[in-house]
Length: 99
Image (cartoon, rainbow, N blue to C red; front, side, top):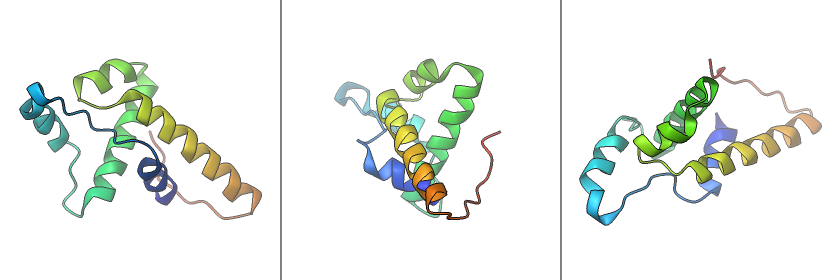
């Protein structure tokens, strides 16, 4: 999960909030909010993205939930890079599966 949070923090903001649709964007963001803070909210967003990706509808889901698809794809790439580095350094990775 630390790799995911680090990746999410290293890319542009994943939340889309146009001036004329701020209320709708804020309502959509609420479904990802975690009571323990923004880092876990970002983790919730990434987990949702991976779930949508498994269903093959991540682009539409991002659009419908006011999320920046490109930022999430970038975070996915950064996370994979960090994961490869950890494996190369023999860091034991323990994570919750995305299923």
